[in-house]
Structure formats: C-alpha cells, structure tokens
Length: 480
Picture 1 (tube, rainbow, N blue to C red):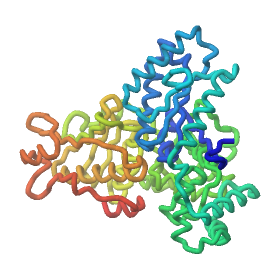
Picture 2: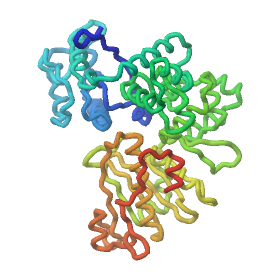
Picture 3: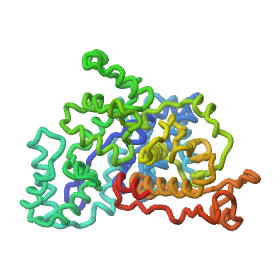
Picture 4: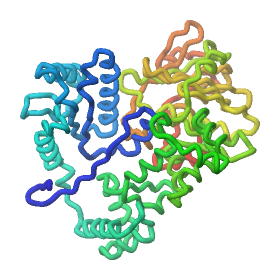
C-alpha cells in the first residue's frame, strides 16, 4: 500500500540469516540501494551476560551495511518491548545504541515520534508496529532511487517478467525466455536488455549474475530460493539438521562428515542437496564466481570442492606450524576501517586455487583463521586472520618470493574488494623489517630498501597489483 505521489510502490523484503556461518553469503545480497532494518532483542541487549555479544553483533551489521550501501537508510528495531521492566529500559537501550554508533552512522533513521534512536516494538502486543510502518513508508517514498526515471519499455519489460513469474512454478527464468519478454516490450538490443536486468538486480527484484555463461543463462525471480538453496550447504548444522537416514541410504555418510568437519565437499554430495533444483552446475558456478567455493584438485580419487565457510578453528595446526613465529611478515591492517566476515574465506579460495596451478605442491592445511599453503613447490606461506586486531598476516620463510607474495595477496584483496565488497574495503599494507621486527608502510620500507621486500631483482610494489575489474575468477588466477 506504499505510494509516492499517488503511484504505488512495490517493496521486496529480504530476510538475512543471523547465524555467523551465513555471514560470508550476505555480501551477495547487500545492494547499494534499499532500506535496511537491523532487528535485535532488547531483552538480550539489557542482559549483562550478553550485552557485549549483542553490541558486537549490532556493530558488525552497522559496518557491513555501511560498507556496501553507504547512502542507504538504516532503521534500528528493538523487539520484545512487552518484556521490558519499565520505560527506563527503553531509555537505557537508546543510550547504549547512541554510544555504540558514536555518530559514525549518519544513515540511521531515528524514531522522531518517540524521540528515540531506534524503534521499540512488540509483535505479541502490536506495540510500536504502526510507528515503524509509517517510518518505513516515509524512508522509502523519500529515497532518491525511487524517483529515478526509466524508459517505459523497461517498465513493460519488468511487467512481462513479473507476469511470467506468476504463471511459472520455477524460481528462475532462462535467458532465452527473458529475451523474448524483452522483445515483446520493444527491447531488441542485447545491450539495453542487459542494462535493464542490471537495474532490476540492483533494486532487488531479480538476481542476475553474468560473469560466466552458466550464470548469465539464469535470471532468479525469487531471491529467497537462492538463499534457501545455498543455505543447504552453508548452514548451521546445530540448527538445521540433515536427514541422516537418507544420507546413509545414498551412501554419502563420509561425504557428509568431510563436508562439515573439514570443509571439503564432493560433487556427489552437492548433487544430493541440490537435486531438486535441476541446476547443480549453476550453484557450483555461482559459489565459485563469488569465491565461496573453489576446486580442490589435491585428491585425485574424487572431485572435491573447498568451502572455507565450513572450516573449523584448529589451534593445533597453528601451533605446530614451523613458520608460526618466524619468517618474513606482511600485515594487511584493516583496523582503521573494517574487516568483514567473508574476506578471509574468499582469500583462502583464491589462494588455494592459485597454488593448485602448480604441479607437485603439497596439499594446503586449513582452518577457520589459519592456512599453510605452498605458492610454489617448496615455498610455503602461512596466512592468519586476527579478528581482534582486524588484520590478515602473511608469513613466509624464503626471501626469493617475498616481493611476489606481496603483489599476489594485494591483487587477491583487490579482487575481493571489487567483486564482493562493493569496493568499500580499505587497508594498510605493512612490511616487517627483519632487522628489528618493526612494521613499516610500503613507502617507508621502499625508502629504507628493507630486505627482502626491496632487492635489485624484485620490488614489493603494491601499486602494481593486478587490476581485476570485470575479470572472471579463472582468468584472474591465470593472469596472477
């Protein structure tokens, strides 16, 4: 029932899973345009045992939305208002949220009706629902993106897509059918068709990724279908249980355990979880192109894929690594901005895929925040993520590849930033001076000609990273 100047507006609502295992997927769906509602339990925020966890959760989402959609409005919604002890609790929540935001999130739309930073509601008592709905309508109707004018042909094209979708039992439309719908709307140019699809994608009406032929052929008209199907693989197994009886009947018990214990899955297991879609290759391509999955060619007995989001923490691997506390160190420091969940997982995908291009390299050792990967035979590299310090560290033993490793990891991070983070990531690259352990900026290390980063035969020039705009993952890896 939302209208602007008498014209009805259609809103699409996307609900994101709050469990941490889903975080790496969220970057696919956080678009620049839209309205974001961050929903949290006020009861949990006021619980002294949980307050720091809830604040960390809120800050993560605030930063994630700002990273991908710096101009989009955000609305904070506190639930279970009916369970609060008094109105003082409402004020306490308001104070905690203001202290958390510290004036750094100008896109938050405040509750002007109640003079609060957020909207307290209670579904059971219907408390605050009307105020929240009015706020959403106001934000949406005043969003500049809503007033952008588009061709009548494009509107007819969208109407055709929506009409086709209503009569279809499928959650997607093939490109050949989309082309016919475009032609019926008077769009004969492939370029104009793709521009219209790009706009519909950005507005959340459809999802259309076109980095590969398989992806380009599928236009998803029900985005929730995409989330549901991907969540069959990337899932919290403590909340969403598999039918183990069926897994045993299919003789996939080993595949199941390997998937959720060491993050390595098989083609057979993927065909099992996605068999109802008829689009197994599409989902493999989708996850590979978004760096949520990569080939794992180190085991020749079966076709394996690495899914880094399913890796577990393994302190033993970190402690046993001979490189743990020695070697030449590179630090990518995100502390002045934000290191989102999903960056390290995507880095592992690309680093493992790069390593796999060389014959006779050892099988990588991986955990949630640590990796030991040979970038060439006999050249092992350790990679660590530290969420507390907001850094990714790279440690190598041999100086021959030092400058090359700086360029490789700089290029990988730029690729992730462009493809998955809306170009919103920022970081400092620091190189360790082996003579005293000091971490120096690249320019300072270059000025001092610090070994091994700056030698006559090699230079650690992070400004010469491989530009990755509009380059598919396989081509990027080959160029790297």
